[in-house]
Image (cartoon, rainbow, N blue to C red; front, top):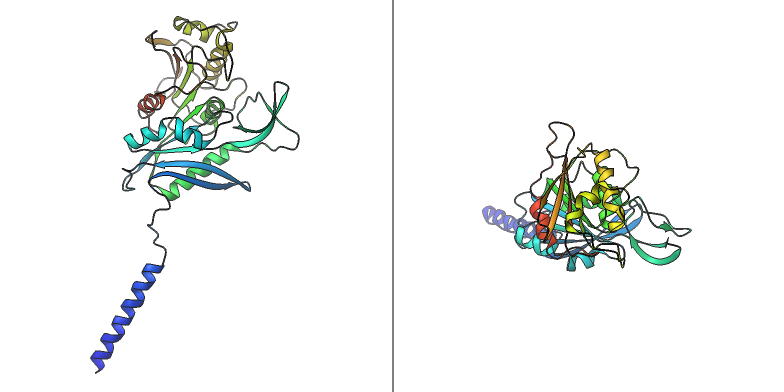
Length: 318
């Protein structure tokens, strides 16, 4: 009888134990779905939005590379999730792709006021916030996303990359100074930054890509000949492409300690590149490439995600 009672007690304990397991939160249960995820992270009291594409091949068993894609003015993470081509590359290459949304501001630009305009807080600003607006800390936002990604996924901290288009390209340039200890390599598409900058935390590989017909959103101007890349990078008086390639490149040459003598490569029928290397010996990761793309106006190029990934994945954070 005593043995029977012990057996009954054991069964009851087993049943309650099973119920507790079923009703408790499994710490290994994913907080995401395969495919599109929308997350909110609190930053300085604000709800900040970002989208993450988790490829079907992600199992969490090994560290996985991550690529951030930053949209331009009046874009958002959802737009670039759909239209940049990065979620498709993420699926094929089994990498996690991340699409943050900037903050919306009332701004003044070129003497006009624009309400509800998405902008990244990246200098130099060619816009100003309206009275009463507080410009958000987007460096803190991106770092908060990375902290959350590390809590949700098995992230390869040595292989986190950043791509930015237009105003997002300017933000990517800001990150090349202030987050270069986190990103392994950075692509700046259509825009960068110039003028007074902080000293970079690390000298890292940077690719700047610009169309030879790119005069900014809605802008027009003469097509820059594909043979003119050397002139665009060295002639401070050129008005081709608003003279911006000269300003962008000279800023990087100065702050990253690059050799001002670059080498030209590529095909004038598609893409021509100028490559700068470090002025200091034994700095193989201190490389800056400017790519001039034929026939491209102000847009993130079709197919750029695949070619950008082919370049980014060459590099790993030391």
